Structures are given as C-alpha cells and as structure tokens.
Length: 181
Length: 455
Image 1: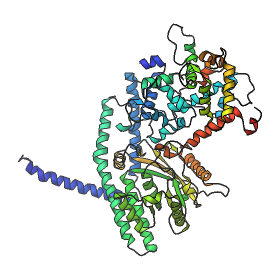
Image 2 (image 1 turned 90 degrees about the horizontal axis):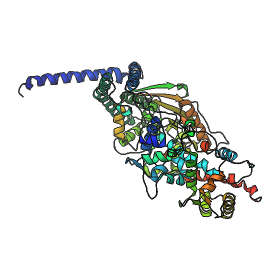
Image 3 (image 1 turned 180 degrees about the horizontal axis):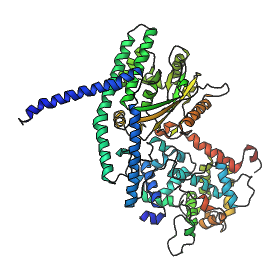
Image 4 (image 1 turned 45 degrees about the horizontal axis):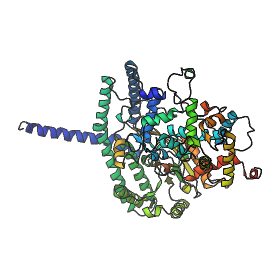
C-alpha cells in the first residue's frame, strides 16, 4: 500500500518484483547484499555493474530491504501521461525526469559531493572502457567533456550543468523500463 | 485390549490378501509388459483424466478469486519487462542522436552514454535470462500439488477436498507402488547384469545383456509413472556414435536408456549408485571414471575416442551441459564431446511440467528428497525427439559445432537457446565477458586503431 503510493508501481508489478526480490535473496533474510546482486551474470558483465549496485545501498549500509529495492527501481518507471500534468504541490515522483537524471549523476559522482570532478570522471570512464584506452587519451576525453559542460569555471560538473548538457536527450524514454503487464 | 485379539488375525489375513493381490496386479500390469516392451495404455488414460481435473481446478480458482476480489498471481513465462534486442552500438547512437545534432560518425564520449549501461543493468536486476533457469519453471494452471501453488487460499470446499484426495492417492497408493517397482527394477538390474557378466563373450551375452538393461529401465520408467512419447525413432543412435541430449535431471538417463541400448559415461560414485555401476559394467562396456580422472580432460577424451572407434561398442550417452537446467532453455555445451570426431546424434527432451516438474535443483534438494518428490508427483510426462545425425564439418571448430547441435536441440524442443554456461549455477561469470563489453564501448569513443592518429 505504502510502497504503491511512494513508487507508483501497480499491485501486480509490486507482487512480481517481490517475487524477484525473494528469488535473489539467497540468504532468505529479507534483505539483499551486494553479493546477491553480483550473482546475476548479466549484471556482473556490465562495466558499470558495481556502480549500479551501489546505487541501491544507502550511505554506509550493506543490506537493502524490499522497500529500498523498490524505491531505487521506481526511478525507472516510465512517465505516464496523466502524471505529467499533476499539480506541483505534492512531492516529486521518483520517476520524474529530474530524478532520473539525478540517478545517472550519482553514478558518476563517486564521493557524493554533488560534483563530478575530473578524477571521478576518469575513474568511471576507466570502468567503461577497461584496458582498451591509454591514460593520456582517456585524460584528454575527460578534459574535453568537462570543458564543454563546465559553466561556472570550477573544473567540475555540477548537477545543474549536467542537466544543461543533457537537456535535449530523451531521458524519459532512455531511462525507463516498460512492464509487459 | 483383549477385544482386539480376535480382530488381530482378521486384520493380518486381510493385509496378507491385499498384499498378494497388489503384487499380482503389479506383475501382470506392469512388470510383464515391461519385459516385452508393450504397454496397456493405462498411463495415457490416467494422464487425460488428470488434465481434465487440472483444468477444472484452475477454473475454480479463477472464479473464486473473482468472487472475493483477490488479485490473482499469474506467473509469466516470457519475463516481466519489455526488453529491446538492440546492440550496444545502436542504443548509444540513439541516445546521442536525441541529445545533440552533432555528426554521429565521429567516435567520442558523451555524458549520456551512461544511460545505456544504467538501464541495461537495472533491466537485468528486474529480470535476467540466466538465474531463472536454475529454479523450477512456474506453471500457468494449478496441478493440485501444494508445492506449485502460489494462490493457495481456501477457495472452496470442493477444491480442498479434491486436493486432499490427491494427497491421499499420491502418498498412500502411488508412492508405495512406485517404491516397490523401483526396488524391483534396481535389484533386477544388479542381479541380471552380474549373472550375464559370467557368460562368455559372444552374441548370446550381448542379446541377454541388451534385454536385461532394457527391461530394468522400463520397470524404472513405470516406477516413476513416466509417460514418454518418442518421435522420429528411425534416427536413434547407432554404434560408434555419441548421443547428446539436454539435461534436466538424472531421470533423463532412464528415459533414454529404456528405448535404446547405450554405453553410459560418468563418474564412479559410492553407495548404491556405485554398486549399480559396477554391476552394469560386467555385462557390457560402459565408461566409468574415477573421481581423479575426471579432471584430466585428455584422459577423458582418449578413453571416449577409443570407445567410439570400436564399432562393436555401443553409442555413448553424454549430457554436454554438465549440469541440470530447468528445461526452459538449453545452455552452453561443453566442447569436449564434440572434439572427438564421431557422429553426433542429438536428442531433445522436453518435460511437461503440468504433471510433475522433473527439474533437479541440486542446491535445494538432495538426491533422495528429489526422488521422493518425483515419486509423489502425478506423473512425469515428456517428449523425446531423435534428431538426424550431425557431423563436424571440415572447417568447423568444436565450439561452433557444439553450438550448431545446441540450436538444433533447442529448436526442436521449443527451448530458449542460451550462450551462457550452465556452470554459472555455482560459479561467478568470467571476466572475459565484461572485457568484451568494455572493448565494444571503447570503439565507440575512440574508434578503431586507424582513427587514433587523427585525434
């Protein structure tokens, strides 16, 4: 009931995801650990797999319960038409464009200081390309990216700058997962 | 207490009579046909009746749920989320296209690239192709076994009574019957093969050995109430060939061996299995390995090659997946058996999970628990397709050949053809796959080697 309100998933979707949660929970203690996620082969081969797994765990914790699981997944719910015109008084839904962008921003922002520094960008780039690109080349890519995005001259990308760079990207569609039912 | 005495002898008499009757029935209806390989068709009738009952039960549950306004949990076999089968390149290009009007052919990095990995990752968290193959398949209609019911609430009296009746029949009537049959089958196998082993080598021994094996496997088939439909029996494996099949449970062996005479390959176990294995090898040459020898791939390959090259020896039965998969997909075949160079006879086995799920989840159940579960299901229904033989083409390597055979089996059995290794059940995935993904992505941001000089 509460989860439905908070995340916006339908009852059957929640049931299905709960079934998925329990099947991943090998220890059967109602929470998932990082190892439980890493057991999914297709996730383990994703270059950003570890960053994504990290997004589920709140600061300093090693276990995520079902509610936390659903809250994170809720970011990827498609934006429905009837929600777009909702009143601005209520709290922003988890799957709003801004929250989706925030999720992606957090993947880059390793130390959670709300800024993507050159170092952080380099590290994430390194994760994505493995050993196939040299340090210098990667460095120049990072520099160029920051140069293009940085507007206040602090050699880092803040969330606002991040949003500006991606303002034309169809975030709603690219960061949404459609349910079959 | 003294009143019981006159009843005692009566009870004992009744017991004696019923046991005798039971055994005579057993003999007439089950063992004798097994010896001759004919069937009365009782099992088919049983299956049809059960199907009708299951359909009725499912309708009742649906009706009951509607009346009470309970949402019904329906398992979906095709996954719960919509996944697009696009490649890494296409997806990332799509994202960039919507983001900017820049020329798309120049390789470069965009902040939006991360969206692709992000979404893919979350998709696999919600629903992935691999981990669900290692647990039993979910059914769409209920088969009156509480182990498969997700909606089990008190729906109606009739349904509960039916279920209770089912429990009674399965545990008190079918189970003892099946155990008795299994016992008969196994002991006959052991004694029969040992006896045949004493005969001098020759046609007589071969003939007897063949029939002893077939007979005992047929009894075991009836012990599980397995209803098997064989297709294309003209493609059955011949001497000097290798028979490969998809693996769902140890019962696969019994199912295939009751229709053909094979040489088994495997590791020697202790206990009852070991006794059976040692007895079987006396009557005809099977290929059993000591535990230490199994690790030595060359030794294994050598012994298999020797066996295959001797045309008088039987076709070998191998399950190249290496582990039990839940019969919704076929996973990577280990290439060892495909390197030998013999003719391969693929066989597809598909179980109908309605009557009893044959999948052995070895991390959840041990062998004995598994067998008990099998014997307390309604029946094991499956179809076996013998596919036409395949040989390795001259330019083909073993891995490619293995994949070709795997696709043929998957196609015939209606299973999903996966490239993932069945060993992922227990082990972590190799880093090589991640490195592949990384390599692909690197190309997108710096282009191929020739382009490097430009930037």
